[in-house]
Length: 248
Image 1 (cartoon, rainbow, N blue to C red):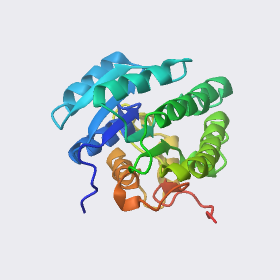
Image 2 (spheres, helix red, strand yellow):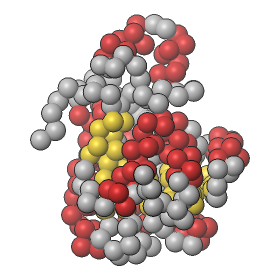
Image 3 (cartoon, rainbow, N blue to C red):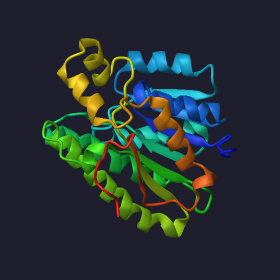
Image 4 (tube, rainbow, N blue to C red):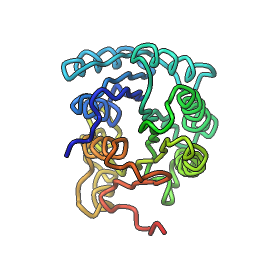
């Protein structure tokens, strides 16, 4: 299936590791031109070096939680790529119970990023916004209430945004991963320790395994593509069936 992403200009936040890195690699493989950011410069340079073998990738250290940084990032991406077609808001404070940090990055920072990007997107040209959510937004999450709360708010924010920008022919959606394992991530650490937490999370996933970043990246690329041109305001759960509630 041709996703028609060749030469699309894509900005991906949190693109240096895990899901963000896989999303970047997938867009590059589809022929897109990509700009990425992350807070940690060392990981960012490492990612850009590796990903550069797949296609055109630009990188810039950025903290989305700092006022003014999202807009500066967008301006840099537009200059680097010559415009902007797709924004993937993937960065998260991953702050567990910390409401202040979670709101600053996952909501306020993400909104500033999106609003800045919309100012550079062409009407009726296939432009779209994708936020990376979490299945934590759809279930009780006692240990990480702030993280779960802002991810739930992200779904509401994007639903409202989708109605606002539909008149411009611009789409907005959420892709919500389940439990994803990648080197250096929290679940990788739990697997190495092979304790109760790892066994419990395996039991919680009906497929008896965790997801891979590439399995999220493939869905994100599809949602961003012309093949999903009638999809907007959606929250797509990619969680191996771990969420027990029903979306109606």
